Length: 167
Image (cartoon, rainbow, N blue to C red; front, top):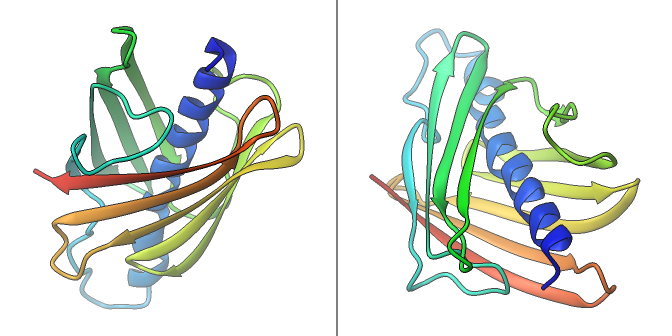
């Protein structure tokens, strides 16, 4: 896999994982007492259960609420031993994600919320869809399943499945 495509896939994954945290704000604004947000906390990628072309050696993401934003921090190690490290904030309003300063030009994403535990993210490169990602958090809130359908830099279709365990 070419380094540029790996970076693009990683950036889209960051957009997607971060975007999922917009859900609880939409679902809980109408409630007088806010329910526990299933997204907030630390999630560790279950390497043994995850499958796909870019599963890293290890990855952890931590999400915390900051007012009407979420702060998302990723750390880990890629297959080639290069570090995974990113940190950004994300508004809880849903819809189109704003381009982050450190993301490559032309990368964007759009979130469609089904409910607090189920949503889709569409990743775009220069306006063309390159990924469709479906996230589901289990009813007990301990596992998140990320199903990815995408197109690599050569135009070839790929599929991936990431399983995240809440710590």
